[in-house]
Length: 492
Image (cartoon, rainbow, N blue to C red; front, top):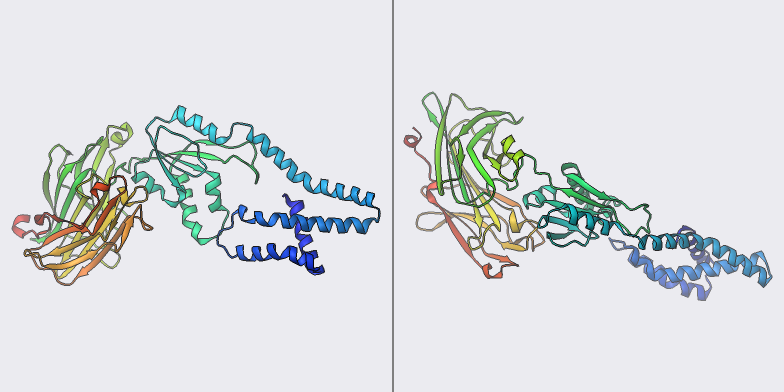
């Protein structure tokens, strides 16, 4: 309509309300009621107002006729006045329509971006994109609908090579003050701040009638301190045991690493370790369990210990390993590492005494590779025990087509009688659910006899692409020796 016609129509509505003739009230009854009803909606799309436009134009025409009749009694002069006013009012939208038609006859940003992508991005690349992006093919494409619904870390964990966004989509979240848009807007900002903008296509001019969006193409930035695959998903199962026990005039820090099911990829692992870090992030102690490259043996077991004359206060435990990649010389040269922090919350600090932490990460389900993973950690110190678990990655994140229902971890005695059970999430969680991973939960255990068994499982699992692997319930026993307390003799 353009602002002149918009303003003139609204003035006409006010005029007709105050004059309130029967036919005019009947004319305005629909647009006023419609506006009040639609105004209660949380989302206001431009198209919602289209049914009101004819009524506004008719109201403007009535006011225009009234103005012309007040200026002159001559019909010919009234017609000239009306023609002049109409020409002035519709000039602005007419120019915009002409500009729109001109832009539509030219190659838009979507087709420009399509040509550039097909020329510069290798076929088969994993690409995430949103609404109003270029119509490309020949790639591993994932339509996220709105890219900002997911964090940039999520795109890295899912192994995306490129992310494409469109101003027709992301601008919606920068033009609103709704609290529901804050996180989405932040995700777009972090995507921009942490990744490389390799190409941008901007139309020659921008206005509310611009038929071409701004297209931005980002290359996911896998910096040397961040792995393409997060810790410790190079394996079907990865376990690490940490013990602190009094020995003589000090303490013995012991750690054992075991893994099985080495996954085929272009990364190699080396120097698995455990390190203690103070609240400021400074390293206090680091124990390398097996120096050199690992991964050739499958299964693999290594153990090492380190004497500590004293224990620091208020520290965190980090476990991990170094890695390199044949895919990137930069990664190999800078010797990056994959690492995970064994953090059980602010209410639980590692004591200045003996304790144990048992950690395992298992790929699930066993009938189909790399759909998601479940971590389990068991902390014990004296009579206190904390059981913690997290599900993450793969198809239960934001980028797959799966869900899992009621994932859990439980502890039982050797006869199978249940001692404790931790429900990681109650209900459906995953990419086909309203709630996606990662998700974690923990519980403080008041009683934990020894020996015991550890189980992980779920009530039901579904994979949209592979329905043959759906089913449940499923329960897997974690090797009991991983969770049995070690004796001082073994430490010695």
